Image 1: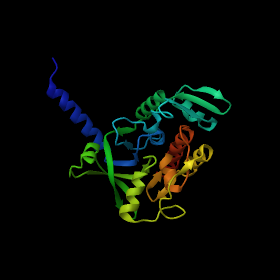
Image 2: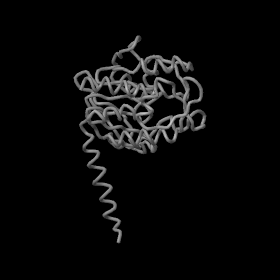
Image 3: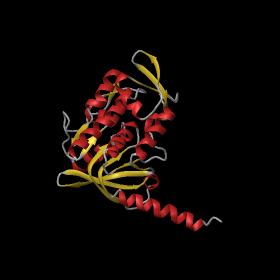
Image 4: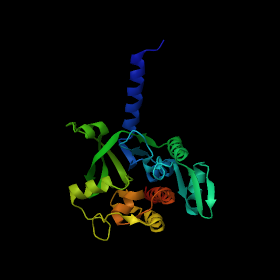
Length: 256
C-alpha cells in the first residue's frame, strides 16, 4: 500500500542531500546546453565535484529545436570524436558534414554526464555571484519561478573554485559580474564586446578559441564565449559547442 507521506519524504530527503553535496564544488556550470553538458561530462569523468544549474524545466539548451524546429543538427569532422564518445549515431551527409537527431543528442549528453557523476539542477536561476578576494568564488541561486513571479524571496549560496558561464547568447553570469562589480574582463575592450552576425565557419572557430577564463575563477563556453569576446554566430551546427565544452573542462582539469 502506497503512503503519500513516505513518497513526499523520499523526494525531500533525496533532493536536499543532493543539493547539500553541491554547496562546495570544484566547478559550477551555469547553463545546460551542449557546451555546459559536455564540460560537465568531462569534469565529472575526471573525478571533479561538479554541478550544473539551468533555469528551465528541460535541459539541453538550443539543441532541442535543431534549425528552425527541424530537429536534426549538423557537426563537422573535428567534432566526431566527441559525438562517438557519447555513443550518438551519425549519418554522413556529404564530405565534412554529418547529421544526427537533436532529441537523441540531448538524451545522450544528459545521460552520459549524469552517469559519470554530474549533478544537474533544473528550475534554478543564478541571480548573482559570490565575489571573494578578487575572483568569482561561487553562485547565488534561487528558484526560477521566484524570479519569474518577482517574489521577494532571498536566495541561497554555493561555493565553487571555478564557474563556467554556458548560458548562451545572454552570457548571464558575465553580465552580472560586469554590472555589479564593474570589473575589467580579459577581452580586448575590458568589457563584453557582443556577438556578431552569422558566419558559420568563423562562428565555429571562434566558439572554441573564445572558450577561456574571462575573469579569475570564471570561464565562458559556447555562445556565451562569442558574446563576451565578439565572435560570430554559427546557427544549427553544433561541433564548436561540443568542442568548447571539452576545452573548458580540459583547461580547468589541468588547474584543479
